[in-house]
Image (cartoon, rainbow, N blue to C red; front, side, top):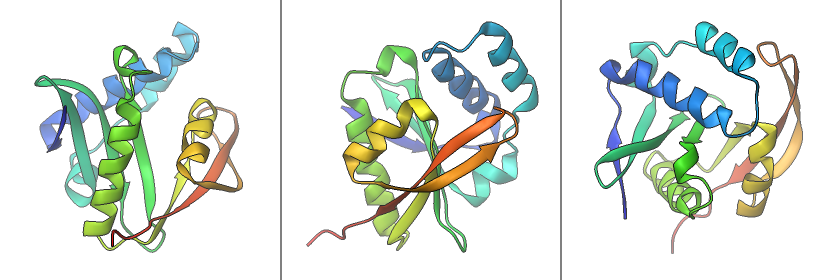
Amino acid sequence: MLNFIDAEAKHTELLRDTLITSKGHWGYSQEQLEEWKSNLKFEGDYVSRNTVKLILKDEEVIGFFAIVKSDIDELDHLWLLPKAIGKGYGNLVFEQILSECNSLEISNFYIISDPDAEGFYLKKGALKVGEVYSEPQKRMLPKLKFTVVKPT
């Protein structure tokens, strides 16, 4: 069973390190990961302004997600540590994301996906609506849209 707790400003380095470690699972070079790590910073106000949840399995952090509610709602982050990938946790986390969206009255949201995660989101029902250039990654990333179905 997974638990979800609110991230706090004190967790900003944990969020960054989790993201970088997760990206490492997908075969990026150590040099590329170090470059991203040096340029990536989560600010405390990002954590306080948005829905940012740590994902815990047996009281150990195995990932996090972040939902940005604004004019254009977005699933800004969903990262699992490599040891948690491929175990079905992503499906459980996505159910929690949808629950959070219902609580926030979000009816649809966008995802700028890492290419390695695009298939996961498409299987969940997201639709590809375009691409966005990522300056840090120097490539195009898939832009997806997901429509939240309210529970009956």
